[in-house]
Image (cartoon, rainbow, N blue to C red; front, side, top):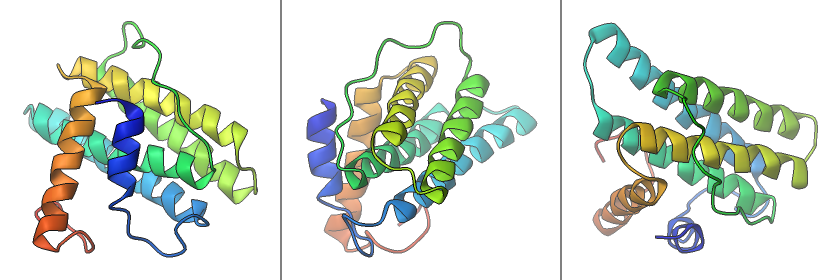
Length: 165
């Protein structure tokens, strides 16, 4: 699945206030989902367990908010460049956290458009790298995310909170 198709299908399911004029909402979502990815990884390290599928599902949520932020800026993201060589999953998590923080800082300072899109484009590259490190691809992450969202839409539980909707 290409990024344009993912964006079209994923954002067709978007439900949030002032859609199209609410970069703050999507930036907060990007921060939150990046934090959930980092927290899940931290627990895996602490408990010495591996849950690649769980991390890939969280990565899908990071992807969704990355695309939604770009959409709020009225910008398109290009397919990510090649994966970052030699980066481990912990490095991916830390980079995603840093990039998410930069997006939020730019929103706070009233900077929108091109500069934020550079951060989001970098985020896509890190997402693609994380997916590869986890034995998957950004295309598979996009598919998994759409399956989850479309299932929730069919069951009428798209809005709300909790992973087990």
